[in-house]
Image (cartoon, rainbow, N blue to C red):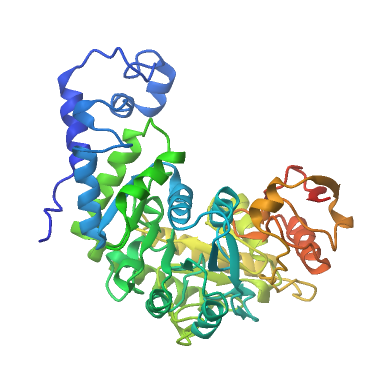
Length: 481
């Protein structure tokens, strides 16, 4: 039986609490904002008055029994899951709780290498061993694609003792694997199917969207509600299917998630879930329409390639998320990160990210056609003012890693710092990545090659924001002794 999606129990409980004029002799210490007037002036009384601690009328995120539990049940119903968990540590915490629920030390997990750093971080934490299905690469765009069905089946056949298969649904660029077929392969082999849906919240509510993980039969999915779902930054959902022990998942979540869950984040999840359930279909139809319009306009400029559903090949690009406005820039002689910087510095337009060949403008429910017109006009002017010879630009975006040891073993092993330019042939013990998108170029336990070093130095030179290593300047890197 479908639940009444008009309800928002956490939000409603906070509204009731606000009207009660409770005298606070508990935390937080700002006491409804009175103790920190500058903060109250900045965020507003409406906000700080409901930045409160767990109490009986408001439930407890670690062990919800009333309004938070009701909000989770409504979320599960809206997303077609057996259970849902409100997460206040971002989708990083959802991904890590999902993997820690499925894997323990020494377990194998089959996954694509173009995963977010949170996935490999989880392997550092639990000691599971990755079995990578290296994705196909679009040689023109220089981007990694989805997992081919045959490659997943080969990995499953060669690693029958693996416990799970993880799928990106979709990738940052909007590329989808055949998650329904992969889920069936995993289940036929007695494995779980996990999904990183950080960029796929709208799949659950839009029409003619790629299939969602829960609809495809996945066992768990990490859903980034704050991206396309409209909730506050750092709020997320973890969804689970019928065959997952929800009590065990709650225990895993409580290993790392705060005991002081933010009611600002939880209420934003509650309100946003209600909004998506009631109006998501209409909202995302408009987003797709805007993205399609922008693609056509950008492609008519010349020099750029705003790619879309024409890439679909039924396997490594099984489907495409049409809300993603990904644009290939190398044909105008500029790396994506260079276009990203020009848009921000010269036009006051902040897009999601730029890498060495592409930019991504993230479209969602808050965008308007007039702002898209401004973006299209800026891109046309950038081509006119900044276009140059494209020779010498690096095109390869994904490099197959050589895994020498598990991420956990490498991360905690004895290590030494060496100049990064002299590290070829050694085994890395830390992460190196451009952020966004946060997909590691190097992860702990992988061999450093000249090709990888060339890529890192090129990305730095072009202005990519590099993160991960202990050395903030990335002149040195930690390697195994």
